[in-house]
Image (cartoon, rainbow, N blue to C red; front, side, top):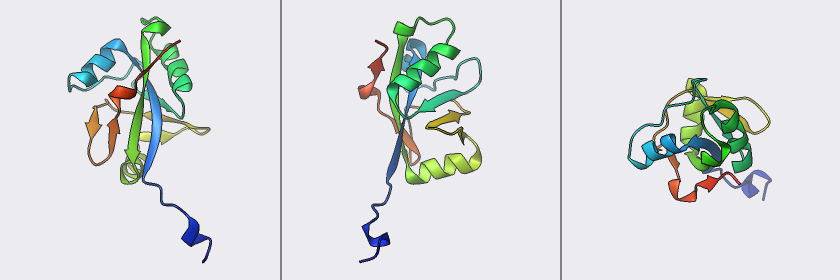
Length: 120
């Protein structure tokens, strides 16, 4: 058995994004969430990082009014979004998302709204 035979295929990639209550409500209602004033969302590998990033760009929101939600990309979705430039790798576990967000965009990603984490 070679080393390649022992490698498990990657089926999905999970990031976290910090959202305001208005953005979260839009997703819950099946609408698109608009990015903050900078025109982009910041995806992080952990919920704390996503909330920290959201506090920097959501000037009108109190940190306690923010939530982090997981965004789960399929392998195909992740690759497609990176290649088209919508998802940009900024290094060290963080990405920029240059588009609005939908609760799901099959076959590319889904946002698990049931796993939202509030700022503590």
